[in-house]
Length: 179
Image 1 (cartoon, rainbow, N blue to C red):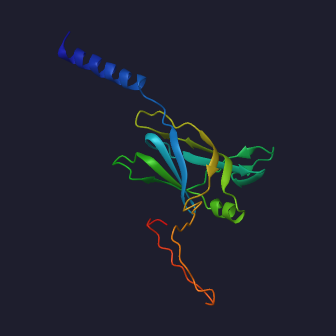
Image 2: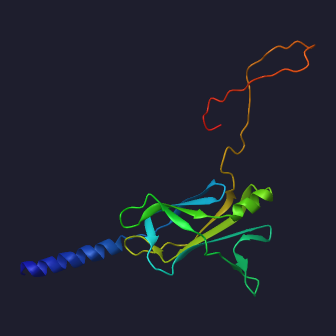
């Protein structure tokens, strides 16, 4: 067998082996990171590989659709118009973390919602560098909290006051800069 044939066989074996071990990218974490941002973390770098591709989202709470719509048959349809951007993409545009703008979070805050029973996201036309496509992902009991939720202020200091004084001031100092 000549060198050229060996090269072709080696190249084909490498290609088949890489495809055999390729794994579909999955979402491993979804979190709200500010007033209108949803951060989506994958287990491997992905990017949009088709111009018509999109990342869609559907949120319904207590029969009210916050993100998405109901079609003429009453079925829920996810919203695919959200802006999604890569966080620290590589030179080819692949990234593990993507941020999606979801302005409807403000409406949910106004409605005093703290959790979402079910949130559904899916990428169409998004894949890893082996052309394995992103699958849909659903998470239950999604927290809408993004800053200091459940913050409790406690003071272990005791101080005495004169009962005849009109007002007393006690200054609390945070030891955590994020407080």
